[in-house]
Length: 198
Image (cartoon, rainbow, N blue to C red; front, side, top):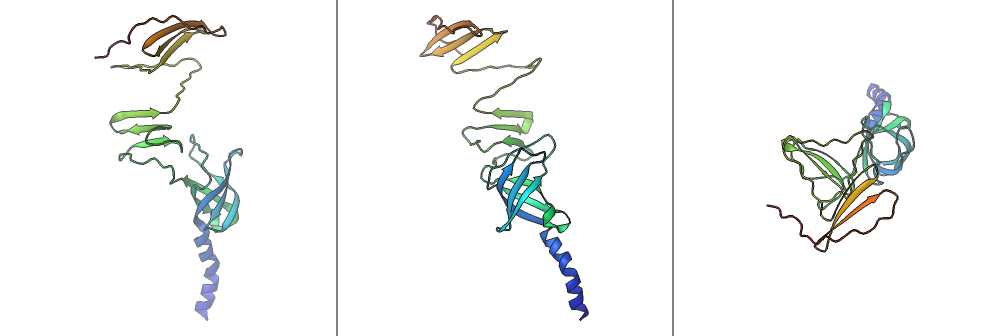
């Protein structure tokens, strides 16, 4: 009799503890709110709407549908469930060494894509199809040792809209000078071979 009464008293507490932490799959993502809100499917069946996702300050991402999440029901109440972590096994960057850190997207593959990797031996590796660096006042690149700039087909520089383009096409160098807003006119074929590299 006493045991039965004790079990009845503990049942709501046990239920709250059981519901406190759950795995979930993302169904919808709303990134227009002050805290990102997610619709998730918990335990394969239960659909929860407008769950706030807490991310690290200074870092944000928009996961794909089907990504997996860990949810926390504050006080064991499903009505106050938040998302504390999201990962996606379909796109996770693999093959890093111990201690290395990376930023990546679903477009990253072994052959290409976007990634920034903080590698061992104080090396930073950045890779993308297109890389833009912009400073409102200054962009400064400095090296106490070597500085290398490589381009396969084109190099262009300008100051205040006046610039020069150097294009290598079909074994021949082409140069063009131009002013921003003016018609770009094909330059003269210089007919010289690219410089040899030792």
